[in-house]
Length: 239
Image (tube, rainbow, N blue to C red; front, side):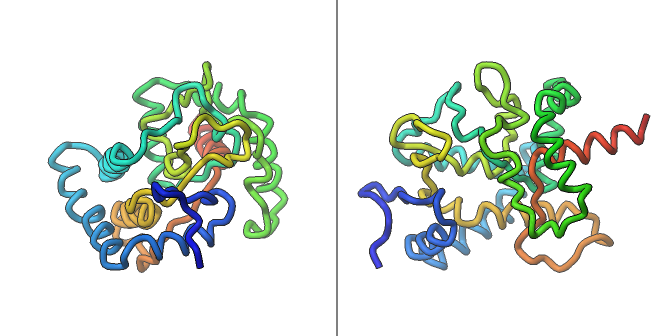
């Protein structure tokens, strides 16, 4: 089967079918190279993070940023926010990183919630309906609506700590012309193949031992709107 990529190794249909993307990655990168990358990102980099007094997640973000500098220049730029109008999900450790960013930059989360009331109310209503969560098309609840953290000038206000969902949507062929993300690419650098598992391992290792379960290679994801609801409800209880 022919790989759906161009001469530069950019996967053409990465945002269309995740199964095709997965198969593409397995064929593009050798299993032993993928395993070496995972081990490096979950062992060596964690030690380096401690020596640099940063979190393991921040270290991984740095590594991913560096990896993208080795390939054709990204066309994404400040003010291009087409990919910021879809559902963005994050693990708890990613959300914790976002909260640290919010604290550092003194961002008013209540204003963020008010600005995104439309999509947050949709997610809140779905949560209250007590439907089987696996049967809810979460992304459909927020599609074509701006991300809660999309600020003035179409710029992300938590950019340094944006989750993996955002970091893997990148464009090499010029500015996206629609919110369908047809110009967005994935499957370019080997770090992408293990990114989600690395983040899951970081979260697992940071969980108190008495709460840990056997590592399964993944961690639960919630839409950013869902995390904002969790934060608001927790904050209201403190008052």
